[in-house]
Image (cartoon, rainbow, N blue to C red):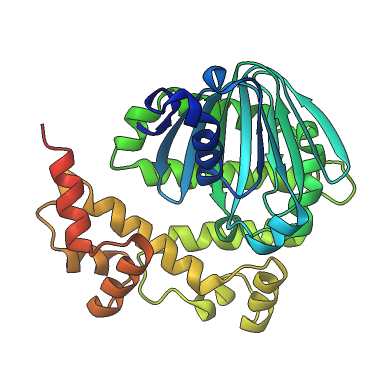
Length: 321
């Protein structure tokens, strides 16, 4: 677990400003209103990484978060927030929908639309952030899903998954397979949003959405194939490359970039595994479809801020007894 902020380390007269800054660092720019005098204000934020996904647990005194249209316009978010209330009742309004979220309940917060969230008194919530480009879903569908997510048959499954993931987060996030847990979480959330965001509200999923889900599953099964590309994917699904690109474009989804991102995650996970120490970095990269070592090294550093060698050395040293 990484405790990114604890208000007990801040002088009482500085806590309001420090907590407000920490809230925005953990999420997106918003107006933060804190309940009570400075000496009674407190907050603790914990963060865990699961590959492309992350989990933030916030335990705070009374708080209100208001994200305005101007803040959305100036600071668009690359992630979607799926939050589960753990203690205290939360109240939020977004897109004309108002809800009270009680402990154990889930809500979807579209960070690219204005919202007003508040909680009085002591409370806690866990929020999973998933990259929008990994979800590959249209903004309109996400907006529709957020308004009726509690009616999806997948609602309780996803809420319980996030709570269980948080309960075991220390061990799970430190495991070499943590990125795979993140991938599974993203797919569960995709299913929830597809179900809740259907046009007729019945929970049925549009054929194009099902097709995109099958395309993504095919890509994941064939990441190790260096020939994997638009032509192969289109042929396997009896469509033209033009049709394939149209489906991806309608979902605001870059096929090539997603494939590269998925391959990088697999390499990153293998480099962190002690049982893969005997394999060279080039061997592992080739195993996941990277035939050009220089191109792979550039993309890895751009994605993670470290060279593959630096990442491997750092993570293996941290896991040594």
